[in-house]
Length: 339
Image (tube, rainbow, N blue to C red):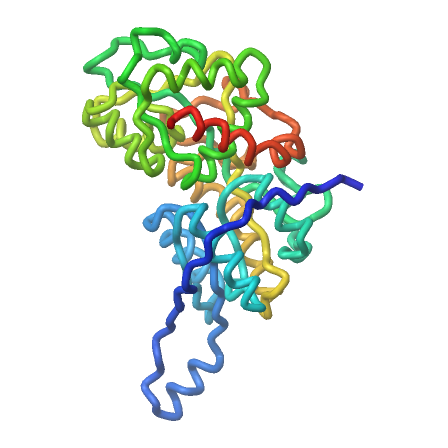
């Protein structure tokens, strides 16, 4: 049996935010319609426009279903979940967010129910939990983006970012806010050839730490930072809109998250929640992911325009259990360097 690690650090509690649903008209016919509607609640870190498209497609395919969404950065979602657990019950049915170590922790704590879905058989096994608690839904690599007005070619590797050329010119997301950034920090911390020495040199090059990936992409596109450590789809979407930004996949390895989805054990809508997760990894759901500029977890869904095939990217596949066990240490080390 795969050993799991409990790595969630203690979190500050925040007041739980209520989710509201539209009330019916009060007439008998309206009351009957409401009673027949199935309501599903999803916690996610997906950009609002993207999750709205997913919800619209799922509701269209599942008549009589209403999906409510609470969207926040991964750090805020973790805090909300921790707060609700202490209060006695998690209010949502599905979580679509973060990274494998986070889901490993939730599985170990009993926060997640085992999935009952059919489309997982179509995926590469590395995107499917062998114990059945989560499934990856899209591949989100972190890359090096650069402003094409500042550079004709960007840094080719993570190692290159420590060169004097890029001092004061790099933007990156905050690992205390972004789940992908926290995961990446753990990968870099443990990766041979990078590690603590590389992180020290990177911080010595005076990077600007912004709240999340979106602001990093904007900073590179605007030129306020000429280089950015950012998830690839953000840079690709900006380039498609005409911004002077280009994407480079580092030659010394590309960390990625697979944006897992799972069903909370507290959910009273287990069947519908599993249907939602199954939709995410279905061919239709994965084709929608590609339309949203994500690399898919299914080979039969294609790839976004302008994106390389997975076989062309040197993806890093570290031991997820070691990443889970070392993520807090890595983020704490990175933060200590900023002081």
